Length: 155
Image (cartoon, rainbow, N blue to C red; front, side, top):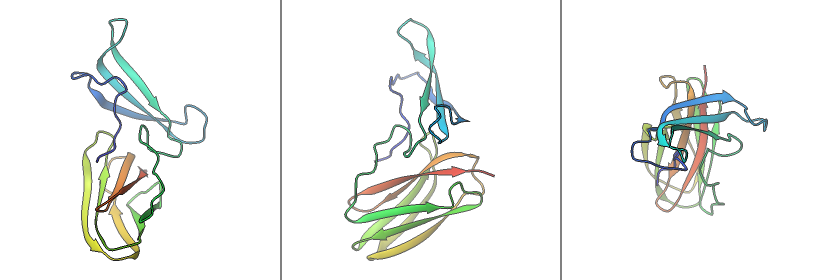
């Protein structure tokens, strides 16, 4: 299942996510926030266009928090990343593993089908040098579950 930003008022011609901005910490919680425009969404007053602000604190905007996992844990460093970031993950059993880096529009920008891995700690280098500055979702999937981590690309 792909987690991505979704409009609270989805409309077929809403153009949600056509423009995504990171204006910094708008709400004062210490984390950079994300602003998403939906220029074609029709409002209740009959006008068009909406602006959504998503808090950047502790989780990827509009995504459920990771539930505790009995078989999978992961961390990303450095974050923010410049040329690459390292995904470190621990498996508690043997399972197929796949990692995806997804942009704010839901496009997979990097994918690695890691293959079947045994129990223990593993590392995976994720290249970021060719990516535009922005916020991405790094999704690590096994046969039974997934974890997501926010990755910020900076220069």
